[in-house]
Amino acid sequence: MNARLAEKEGCAGLFLRLRAEGIADKALLTAIEQTPRTIFHSAAYSDAVYHDRLLPIDCGAFAESPDLVARVLAAASIEPGQRVLDIGTGSGFLAAVAGRLAERVITIDRYKTLVQLAQQRFSHLGLGGIVARQADGLKGVNGEGSFDRIIATCAFDGMPRQFVDQLASGGVMLAPIQSEDGTVAKMARLTKIGSRFEREDLFDVPYRPFIPGVAAAL
Image (cartoon, rainbow, N blue to C red; front, side):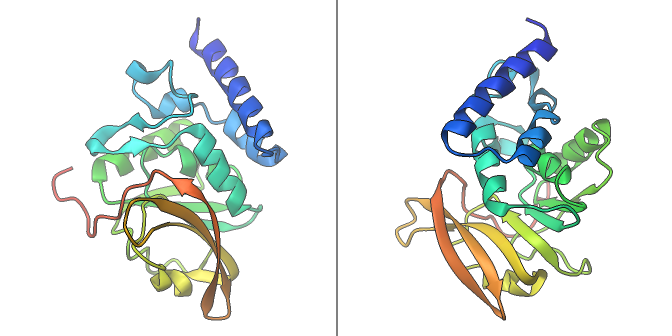
């Protein structure tokens, strides 16, 4: 089976699963379809990129399944013209799909290797509205103004109140928050109301806890 056919069949299977979950947003599905996942993974995993499972990537990290990416982006409800901060670049797939929905995406990761690889993939796909940077995800970014959406793919040990000032009024942050015993992380949708967050818990996620700072060697 050639790569293009494998992408087409993998995407079709993904869309069937998403529709069964009630995810049918046309703009989101089109953005996913236009972003071939095989570009974001090693050839060793080309047969599994559309499976609903985690896949290993560089720096000892992992990439979430396309199902989870779609679930998170559906919850974020990104609209045209919005500015998005993606915390935890990983393979870059989530940022790439978000970049087809938003006006501008800044994606950050503690690993320089992941940032460089993702930026190469964005350039290959002609996604000029996405910028990848190495940064401490617990601090976000400075000097970029406020964001309409913030999406984190590492788990916080409590409410990430430090991001209130980085969100526009009425903006939404998707943040995994660990349970008190640290056994599970649940994705929360945090809507900025005034100077506080209004929290809505959504679904369990497999994201690891944040590691402060940036990586020195990778």
